[in-house]
Image (cartoon, rainbow, N blue to C red):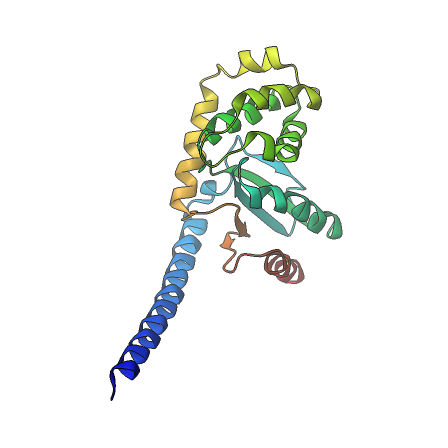
Length: 214
């Protein structure tokens, strides 16, 4: 066997090992998360979690997101579309996985905006202007404060509410839960306690439909 064939077979063998390893890892993660969902459902939904949709919905969709994440911004209207196509069937739970620099501060702003009943107004204006304030290296926090008033938010009150130590506790709890559930990228979706194995809009839509049809 010549040298080129040996190299080729080695590459093929490594590729197969990688695929097999990924498959086994996903399987073990699914089993782990299934056990967690049976023994500790709080890891998916906390008392502080923002929720849209009826409590008796067939599907509970838990989303771990980062306000600075471009994919999270892209999926936000897509998830709303899925919910509109399935009225009353989905309960959407918003959780945080602030992986980008200073995203934990932006999460606190969102939670503080909740005290003014402006949570979604704040979230939507932050997503809309994400390209202006978010950066993977150095976010422009001053820009955030300039755009918040366009959502009808009282920024003086917001600054006072940001002093609440409970906001830090919320961030730390969500980070801990994301770690427990193996969330490494955002958005991280769980449908009725099961992780979305292959990331994508059509995959998420199909998984939700499958749970609704059960």
